[in-house]
Length: 122
Image (cartoon, rainbow, N blue to C red; front, top):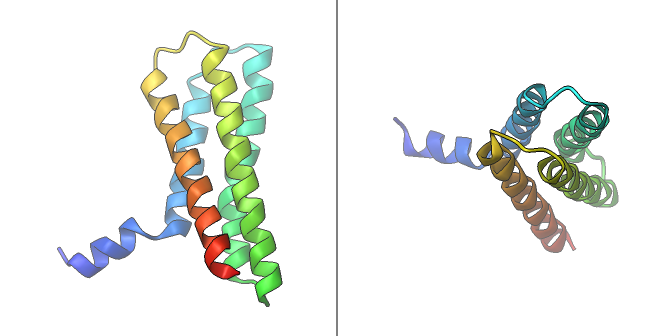
Protein backbone atom coordinates (compact mmCIF):
# COMPACT_ATOMS: atom_id res chain seq x y z
CA UNK A 1 0.00 0.00 0.00
CA UNK A 2 1.25 3.42 -0.93
CA UNK A 3 0.47 6.06 1.76
CA UNK A 4 0.33 8.82 -0.87
CA UNK A 5 -2.23 6.89 -2.92
CA UNK A 6 -4.28 6.10 0.18
CA UNK A 7 -4.20 9.76 1.20
CA UNK A 8 -5.36 10.82 -2.27
CA UNK A 9 -8.26 8.35 -2.13
CA UNK A 10 -9.33 9.64 1.27
CA UNK A 11 -9.43 13.24 0.09
CA UNK A 12 -10.75 12.74 -3.46
CA UNK A 13 -13.88 14.85 -3.17
CA UNK A 14 -15.23 13.78 -6.57
CA UNK A 15 -15.13 10.15 -5.42
CA UNK A 16 -16.54 11.02 -2.01
CA UNK A 17 -19.51 12.84 -3.51
CA UNK A 18 -20.06 9.93 -5.91
CA UNK A 19 -20.10 7.45 -3.02
CA UNK A 20 -22.51 9.69 -1.12
CA UNK A 21 -24.90 9.70 -4.07
CA UNK A 22 -24.56 5.95 -4.53
CA UNK A 23 -25.19 5.25 -0.85
CA UNK A 24 -28.25 7.52 -0.84
CA UNK A 25 -29.67 5.59 -3.79
CA UNK A 26 -29.01 2.25 -2.09
CA UNK A 27 -30.66 3.54 1.09
CA UNK A 28 -33.75 4.81 -0.76
CA UNK A 29 -34.23 1.32 -2.25
CA UNK A 30 -34.71 -0.04 1.30
CA UNK A 31 -37.51 2.35 2.26
CA UNK A 32 -41.08 1.13 2.75
CA UNK A 33 -43.15 1.64 -0.39
CA UNK A 34 -45.33 4.63 0.53
CA UNK A 35 -46.34 7.71 -1.43
CA UNK A 36 -44.36 9.95 0.95
CA UNK A 37 -41.23 7.83 0.72
CA UNK A 38 -41.52 7.71 -3.06
CA UNK A 39 -41.67 11.51 -3.29
CA UNK A 40 -39.07 12.17 -0.57
CA UNK A 41 -36.82 9.53 -2.11
CA UNK A 42 -36.96 11.25 -5.49
CA UNK A 43 -36.04 14.57 -3.86
CA UNK A 44 -33.06 13.20 -1.92
CA UNK A 45 -31.80 11.30 -4.97
CA UNK A 46 -31.89 14.50 -7.03
CA UNK A 47 -30.23 16.62 -4.35
CA UNK A 48 -27.49 14.12 -3.52
CA UNK A 49 -26.69 13.60 -7.20
CA UNK A 50 -26.48 17.32 -7.74
CA UNK A 51 -23.77 17.64 -5.06
CA UNK A 52 -21.30 15.55 -7.05
CA UNK A 53 -22.37 16.74 -10.48
CA UNK A 54 -21.90 20.38 -9.53
CA UNK A 55 -18.55 19.63 -7.91
CA UNK A 56 -17.36 18.15 -11.22
CA UNK A 57 -18.68 21.26 -12.98
CA UNK A 58 -16.82 23.47 -10.46
CA UNK A 59 -13.58 21.68 -11.22
CA UNK A 60 -14.09 22.39 -14.92
CA UNK A 61 -15.13 26.01 -14.43
CA UNK A 62 -13.58 28.70 -16.58
CA UNK A 63 -13.16 31.33 -13.89
CA UNK A 64 -13.26 31.93 -10.15
CA UNK A 65 -16.79 33.38 -10.19
CA UNK A 66 -18.17 30.28 -11.92
CA UNK A 67 -16.20 28.02 -9.54
CA UNK A 68 -17.64 29.76 -6.47
CA UNK A 69 -21.17 29.65 -7.86
CA UNK A 70 -20.89 25.86 -8.43
CA UNK A 71 -19.46 25.32 -4.95
CA UNK A 72 -22.37 27.30 -3.49
CA UNK A 73 -24.73 24.98 -5.36
CA UNK A 74 -22.87 21.96 -3.95
CA UNK A 75 -23.31 23.34 -0.45
CA UNK A 76 -26.98 24.09 -1.04
CA UNK A 77 -27.64 20.59 -2.40
CA UNK A 78 -25.78 18.99 0.53
CA UNK A 79 -28.03 20.98 2.89
CA UNK A 80 -31.08 19.86 0.94
CA UNK A 81 -29.92 16.24 1.02
CA UNK A 82 -29.56 16.45 4.78
CA UNK A 83 -33.08 17.90 5.04
CA UNK A 84 -34.71 15.11 3.01
CA UNK A 85 -32.77 12.42 4.86
CA UNK A 86 -33.87 13.86 8.21
CA UNK A 87 -37.47 13.98 7.02
CA UNK A 88 -37.33 10.36 5.87
CA UNK A 89 -35.75 9.34 9.18
CA UNK A 90 -38.33 11.18 11.28
CA UNK A 91 -41.36 10.00 9.29
CA UNK A 92 -40.50 6.29 9.21
CA UNK A 93 -39.82 3.56 11.74
CA UNK A 94 -36.58 2.52 10.04
CA UNK A 95 -34.73 -0.69 10.76
CA UNK A 96 -31.58 0.78 9.17
CA UNK A 97 -31.46 3.96 11.27
CA UNK A 98 -27.66 3.67 11.48
CA UNK A 99 -27.45 3.99 7.70
CA UNK A 100 -29.59 7.12 7.57
CA UNK A 101 -27.63 8.67 10.45
CA UNK A 102 -24.38 8.03 8.57
CA UNK A 103 -25.84 9.63 5.43
CA UNK A 104 -27.04 12.65 7.41
CA UNK A 105 -23.56 12.97 8.93
CA UNK A 106 -21.93 12.74 5.49
CA UNK A 107 -24.26 15.41 4.07
CA UNK A 108 -23.35 17.64 7.01
CA UNK A 109 -19.61 17.03 6.51
CA UNK A 110 -19.89 17.76 2.77
CA UNK A 111 -21.73 20.98 3.57
CA UNK A 112 -18.86 22.02 5.87
CA UNK A 113 -16.24 21.07 3.28
CA UNK A 114 -17.93 23.19 0.61
CA UNK A 115 -18.27 26.08 3.06
CA UNK A 116 -14.54 25.84 3.75
CA UNK A 117 -13.74 25.76 0.04
CA UNK A 118 -15.83 28.91 -0.45
CA UNK A 119 -14.05 30.70 2.41
CA UNK A 120 -10.64 29.82 0.99
CA UNK A 121 -11.69 30.92 -2.51
CA UNK A 122 -12.45 34.48 -1.47
